[in-house]
Image (cartoon, rainbow, N blue to C red):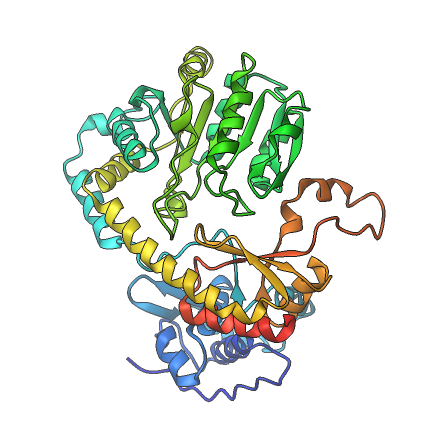
Length: 479
């Protein structure tokens, strides 16, 4: 392979990030005709070692060049110049529009993104997934390409049923399970099942996407405050809610795990009146680092009041887009009456692949590997945050993929986020998940937050080295 003639002189004091300097150098070389179409560039690992920068920095530069059409990423082969031969005729000096675009891009580019939603895909068993897919397609019969059952294939529902009972204590039959392409679709079905304008209660702060979906149904939404044990049932009783949406095993984003006493209070509330239900969103229960995963709320339900929702997006991959819902029998009858005509939104081929992935033990082995990897990252982050303890209260550990830092110095979330952004770090504010703050933001100018500033640091997609480097930068600007 002809290696790229690199003559970049990276300057940390130039006012431009390192990735921008790499990006601009390669872009200008392509425009000048020094790099020709189909010429291969060094791997990101090689270039990172050569320039003595992190691999993430090079990946960001390559990613921008791919996005703009200068490079092409070929799977398992690397990066190639894909610009047309006559591109060198274009003036290297950027246009006014390009300068505005670059300025806007600079404002949103980060060295490290502590996203609480991202996961690590570097350990995904791609070879196993490909092997299963190949075998299924080779042996595929015409029936696999038929429409299939509205609730999902019975084979996958049976496998999910066994998995949920063994791992989460969920008591159900395959006929109670509905498979859908993501939680959004399942919540849309619930709107048809529960009826229009059903009053709903949600924890506050809460999962914003679910909140927006319920509001799109024209559901009256009551926002219920939380304490150290989760949603406050005493406040819930003061509302006219018929349904409560909760995340008892690991509340998002606070990380609170609801103890058995509060769980029984919730079940009692649901059982006190006909037509009351609890929607249990069990989005990341697989990732707990001390002890076994907590039993589901549905496992304690003896009156058929809990709608259990789960997904494989966190545990396997976001692109899988396969979620499932367990309906209590009274709601199952309503589903068949009012929604039985809806076709399944998940390809039967994808269902078959997932079924074999779980049934043959690959899923369990992958989960065990990821628990180990996330535990390592969790422990590294908690260790790196020890110098922060004088300035922040640290909470939300031992489960999930994010940690909470609550400020002790009286600073605002906006101030902390701005300091991090200026240093090239993206963090997330708890205020974005407090729905009442979103509703009040257009009211009184200068109104202060009633809650102390709390920042969310996710670590799922970051490498151990990136966690160390990112927290070191945050320590300089926050502590």
